[in-house]
Length: 144
Image (cartoon, rainbow, N blue to C red; front, side, top):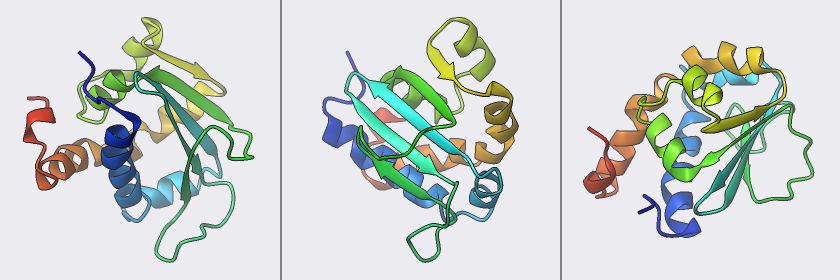
């Protein structure tokens, strides 16, 4: 059974994670400095989140923008496609990106070295995501 029962549920938790990450001084400047557009394409349920670090952010206090939806008008430098359950595990720090790419649990298009370079930058999100779930009353979704 899928972790997220609907787009709305996935959006609630992942948008909160991305919103915190785009303001976090440990994470966001490193992503911004790459001037990259990264698109995450999720299935089961379907959702698309695009990180736009190629132009200045539109929100005060943010280092980049996160846009939701299939048609953002942006051409991604990197596209990462996966089941939402894989992303849920990944943001808990439970998925090795290289192994997931090799097993095709995550399908990447674009310059993979750019993504690998960002892995250390996003590592604080592995603690952030379970904390967000806990704060939102969804301890049942936390992977031990």
